[in-house]
Amino acid sequence: MKLALINGSPKSHGSASGALLTDLRSYVKEKTEVTEIGLHKSVISEKVLEQLKNAQVWVISCPLYVDGIPSHLLSCLIQLENAFDKDHTIHVYGIVNCGFYEGIQAEYALELL
Image 1 (tube, one colour):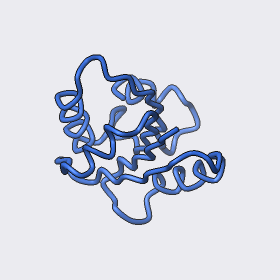
Image 2 (cartoon, rainbow, N blue to C red; image 1 turned 135 degrees about the horizontal axis):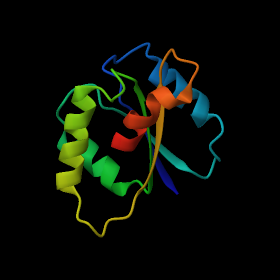
Image 3 (cartoon, rainbow, N blue to C red; image 1 turned 180 degrees about the vertical axis):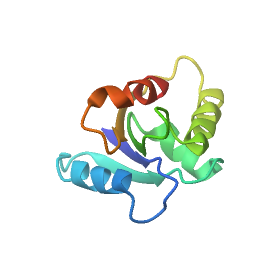
């Protein structure tokens, strides 16, 4: 299996989103091919696009921004939607981190993902 761990935080270093993906990676089986991708800007390079096309599973981690996702990540998701054909099957999982105790705060952001 090919897994892409996608950090959708605007911070390239020291983000909670990155820390969560690092923790998650320790639970991934050794046979799994893992690619770490940072989507910190609003444009996706061709190299990153190819890496994402080769992955079977994506785990996207991002912070909660006013009950939604960061705008640069939304721009990246729109680019991805346009780059893939409708028959391409990828399993997508989302992690939205915030400072609230209630998980309901992240409901809309997870729907966006």
